[in-house]
Image (cartoon, rainbow, N blue to C red; front, side, top):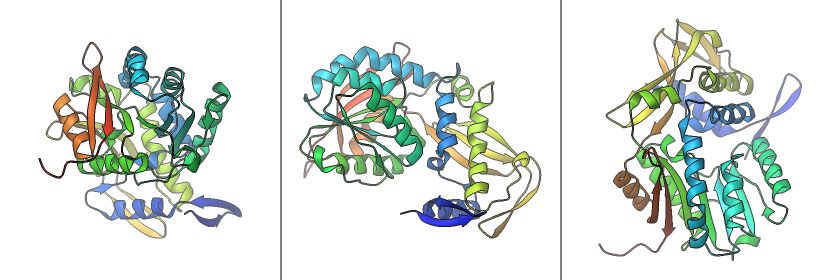
Length: 325
């Protein structure tokens, strides 16, 4: 539930979990704020811009792969199903899947309400024969789907290797939440990025145009706007790092000088060189990804990858878990 506040004579809606996560994250050592808070309206727009960058291979690689294997996906899914997308629909991948599968209903789920409604309206215009029912909420937790789709077969859709933004433990929790939201018998089509040359990865998360930097820094703008922050934006820079031990790209906001600022009535001091850890993007080999999905309660039925083996799509099913090995 959102808490209503008045700022500068205007009503604004502030998510109390956003406030709690920011304050606790700035108090923690090392400092860290969950990546899901990137996605206010501006952050969602910037991420769409990132997906079009030449360095950002995941979107074009996954889109081409999806186009190639979509007929196989359609044959594996019951006709008249409901597609449930965890995250607002991409302008490329979602229409591609919907044209191929031709579901009865499409339910996009996202925490960013304005962006969710805009993307859902675009999909509804393009697919007038499909019932589009956006659901605003945190898909990291089990959600109750609209009653009119309860009897339909479900295909969950989670593209973009967003699962990699979570630690393995959190990713397993998410997969279990998806399983509970969709129900036994449901299918899940999920994109997972592969481990590859760190130079390729680093350029994808630190592009020459600085769009990813703007995306990262927008989090500070949101904090200043929504929870009474006075963070000096010019005192921070975007940093991307490859952590080989944990097989992940890390994004940080690094203080370029000593900075003192307030957030939600608390004062914070950061020294030059200190960072706020804002995102992880874990990369998985084939066996790693299958183990991750199995831990979340999903049995892989199909696996596809592009010719360079940079990105994979998995089709998995929620089945009853065996009582014994």
